[in-house]
Image 1 (cartoon, rainbow, N blue to C red):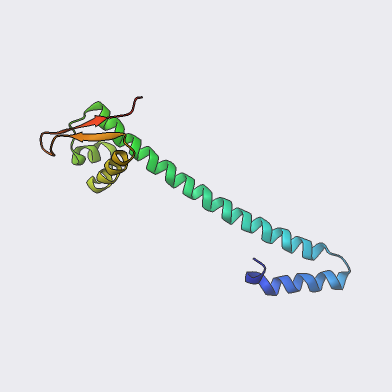
Image 2: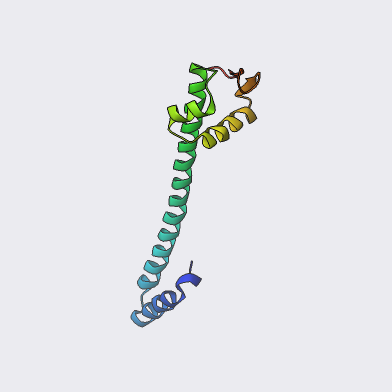
Length: 117
């Protein structure tokens, strides 16, 4: 963080030396620490929001299957408001975590929900 703002860092040291006080240097360092924390925390907040949104869509797909196990990916997509490709992504994730499984073929088969609730 100091390297990225090296000129300001040296200016803060010079001001502190000139005034005989550590205030300018401490303010610089606290500002850099605060900015770094906000960037880091903000990044995690964004990642958390994205994860929450993905989880919500996956649960919406699962709820559609619970209501009607014979729905196609296309129909689920229309109900949830996502593309068929996204539905297939969530179906694969649900299968991988053993939440659902496919019984029968694509045309005459249906989804079996393996989790309770």
